[in-house]
Image 1: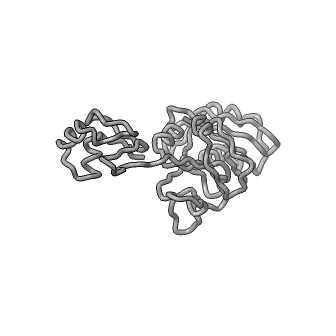
Image 2: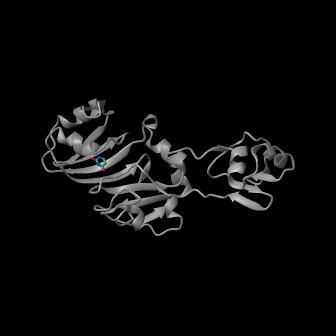
Length: 235
Ligand code: URA
């Protein structure tokens, strides 16, 4: 995701056509307000959610949006798709064209999906350095044996990408059921990890991202905005 930050002089010039050199004059005349305070520095970095005005004209007034969805099976984690209904099609909110998906789920995976217009927030959640755990409930075709958990914890080598997966936690919750926590999201990762044991995944559901659990009041296909506490929990 591209950075939505820009220096003040560039920002004003792009939004108004005013020459970047003339921005100094506007600042000296206190005609530019940043979050209701007069701007003081042409080099000031403008974030996506800073409110910017020139005289009485609002040049930027974006509000952050954070949505939790219970993604159903059969809906694609994309903003447009020619074949399938997308998660955006399920949303009934203004400005949905601004949103992007924070960590996709496969077509036949259900569960917690986050959408936002805040690129910085989503980068923190998905970047490998932050190691935010994503917890899944997995249903398998065949019984899980004792050698699974150590193999998940040790990491598995995927020759196609030439990577070894980060340590993952597998807790057996039934003969054919497990809770798996990953701190990354490689392509079809869980299915491929169980594939090493020739054990097909027949159900996959994301229950939590970091400390945020899927709201059990949301039926498949439903969504709601996150509370400020929930946003902070993942910041
Ligand atoms: N692992 C998978 O295989 N699929 C998902 O959707 C998520 C994790």
